[in-house]
Image (cartoon, rainbow, N blue to C red; front, side):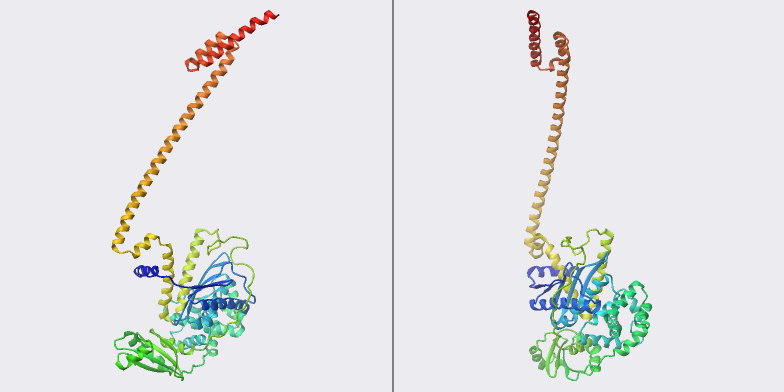
Length: 538
């Protein structure tokens, strides 16, 4: 992984990915197609309102921060991954990544992923896996729901299906890729039966009862009057899918000699297509007369497939595909329903109270302990991994593409944090790298000299400060001594000039300025003159 990461960085540095953004009250959509970005943003707001009313009975308040939505569109497998965190009764840290054709994004992926956010906002805790995915799958297009029914019913053989008690108590998605598709299909089958039986609000009340008393048998009997196994058996009988008629379809299958994926397809997938009674025409591009046909259809690698309906080309798939993917591509050619966008939003906030300043952080709580923060990070990481796993369902081949998209996003983030020197090193030649290394050494020498100068300067400042402090102490001592001498001289002057002069001279010594002695003599002579004058006046 590290080597692959380093190889991708130069590619990302060399070019900018053009993308458009569309913002609504609760979603911030990033997509390379501006029109599609707006359609997805409006659809997300529409389904957020519709789901809240249908399942909860009322609209949700406006989120304190929009949910970022990253869109990858094209002729690729449909899927999505939505992550968020819970703490102290709050849900935050939204992130939604979706991919697929515009049709599947609007009629299946967006409603599916938005319901995850509605449930998270309502319950403020992790919803049991089977119920969360089963309810969200209920919101997908009829062709997708029918595909899930087919998978669930095809795997009814002993040892293949997931036992119902295991399904209800699974804390994580299955690690086995085959079991992931089965997990989704069985969850969808059971959830669809319960929702059709008593409606969406009752399904929400059923989950609330389980949260209050975590016992599935009690919750099933309270809300649906039967045990989980009985409910699933009834779901199998009620939800048997209507077989799709493939009479009007045929598939051109392009292959060539020595192609391992082609051999694998013919061994493992082709029999299922034959069983579904769909016509498959093999075109061997190794034959000279077929090469021109491949060029006309833009086929550059094998295996590849072109799906026709009534002789009209419907879809070109230029990658290895399973029989289920090809059948789903045929069954899913219906146009997406038009989404009527509802205007208006609710009031209120999730996260910090109105008037507080959450800043730019995804986590609005400033008082989390280190242990709480670590726990939240673990939950986010686990949720991210589980959500990624959910996208692969019966399309295991799409996992690599989804991971590639997430990896590119991570690399773009790394790119934004690179220094100019690091960017230069990535794209530099050997000579340029040598020059950069020389400059780096010179900078290091300069920095070392700068540090030494600062150190010496600070040391000199300390010494100067110490000298000033010592001088100040000497001045204070001299002031104190002078004051003491003055006080003694003033006191002794009252007793007689000669005595005071002798005492002052003996006490102060020659350290007292001679000016003081002169002042005292003058004062003494003046005093004597006044004493002689006073008797004469009498």
